[in-house]
Length: 88
Image (tube, rainbow, N blue to C red):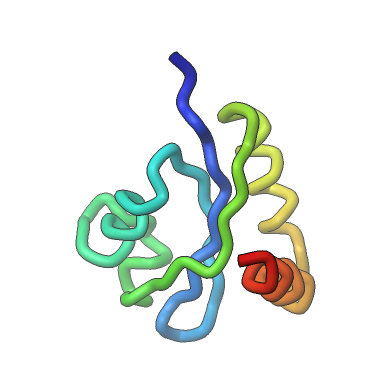
């Protein structure tokens, strides 16, 4: 049974973005906000909120997409997030 991998972006309390991958977005957001298992970057920028999510075929595809998003300029990430909000 394969897991459904997702790429996500959270907005931190200081307005910065953090991009990651997971198989369980809800659990991961809880970890970012309340656990020592959160990314070091988000630990000092709590609370975070989910602003973007997309599905990937597998872990490899999710990692490649995460890398693409992390290389984007902030304005391009903002456009990606806005388009995601408009699709909801």
